[in-house]
Image (cartoon, rainbow, N blue to C red; front, side, top):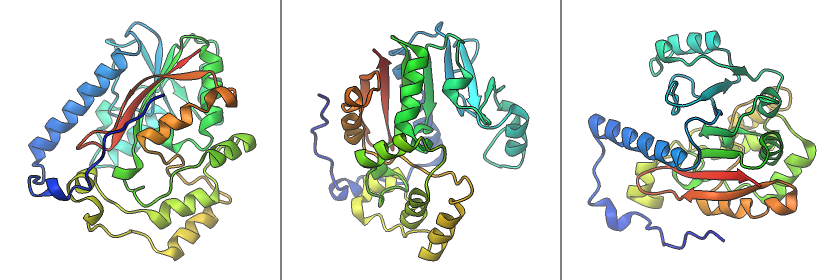
Length: 280
């Protein structure tokens, strides 16, 4: 059983030693994060195995020809380029060529028979409405030895900081209903509890980060009503690193042929943990 036993500071003792990061320091931190994540993926699979990266947009972690990788997204290449052209934070010339456009088709269906051996996603699994069903189907498609790898946001260090964890009962209920989009309650919780805090603010100041919630109750209810008939993109799966581990330990009883092979807990000053699930 995986257990992360060390106590986490509330930040008060360390705050006096922390200073806001400069632009160059932030860039270095992001490069270090990318290198750590690449090293983690390389410790789970080989670059010659056929894999799929979900939602890389203009910032893929796994790049061709270094990796034998295909890309999947809900939008086509041309759609992503148009989005990038209208965003100051994106680069249209870096948008990847999407191999699997997930419109009206799930990723397990899209890769059927292709011989894919692993799936990688960075900050995508938390958006999947029925996570258990998604993982079960991917495991069945890839078969023994396949891998599902990811970087997953820790709810304590993101705008989900006020949201309660997703319970096992919620995961099982969504799986039983095979939902394909966030349900209204999940959408309400996202907007009502949304607090746009940065990981560094939490590591530095703990509960005294001073960031207010962003949306009103009226707005949260409006988005809840919208979600009754339309897709609203929110975080559906709200977990800490240990809570994710605990979830994976229920997989055998839920008919999901995946076991946690490798895990890196959330570390200062980051907002995510890394995991590798192997098909058994």
